[in-house]
Image (cartoon, rainbow, N blue to C red; front, side, top):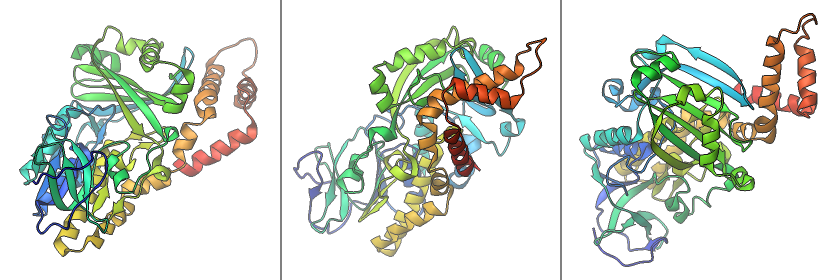
Length: 449
């Protein structure tokens, strides 16, 4: 490292390095960063993984499931080594409206054995484990280090980063930015103008301690089996969603709230979370739980159309920094896309180092396009607009619950009304236009079909 003074928060112009400190620098030891560092080290090149926290995972919060198929490729024996809380064998999609709910409940014991579908895990434990795997392959993990700027040559090529350490500059042939939502490194490289509020949500979560036996009785599971519940509604009509999932001896409950809607409503997220926990369909699951953690995190939910440029001269962008979070209503996934994008960024960087040709970094985009990472995002590019729309958030939960209530209400001696009559009644009650309903149905079929 060499000490060069320069303004924090702006890219710093430096001469072309005569030699480099590392082949690759990865900024951020979340799932994307650790996957990238692991791949570079596995290829036999020198790589430093820079993390601002005291250990990998110390600053991360998490509200979902890690899915295994990308890990099959990255770490083939992951299921034997990963710090798993529970294997998800039961998956629910719940719609809330007032004091009502409609739930689709699916369970499969196939998910509770090899090859496993997904698992709940604590991010502090998971990230620490993943960074440790990168270290075991030869990566250098540097913690408690804040990256303050990119280093660029006069021609504009990224050749390293400046840190807050006294001897604070590190040089490398490639920098991989995995520095999270609203990546300032991507901005400094001219790849990102910043996320719009309309494309960003705030995730808030409470982790509630409950006895293991209580969790298993309430959620209808046993042993290492777990439950993941994704919720539409329950957000005080603010665009977003909610979730509940099980760990061994805790239950996580949280909300995902659109920033624009949250600001316009003037509501506090913790108050909305309290209301969610009091809903008749949620309260029996979480009552008596002791809050052991409260956390909040910005989430990039604009999808495919809000992604920054992913490849620059000497730099790649992955994970949340690349807005790779799939918020599609049925799915709310982020960690598997972070792992995939980091893995492919590491491979592209290693290829560029191997050949000495920085143009090979463009292969990163090709790898992403040929994989689930951009394949899923491209296919579901219309999902964020549909899921966070006013009708989906304010009208359709009531319509769905009206239909279910009408179908299951026994109103003898009157004859049963039939689905078409119930649908017409619900459309009128919720002031929906049939053409909007038809358009949204077609969009959903085109997106999810």
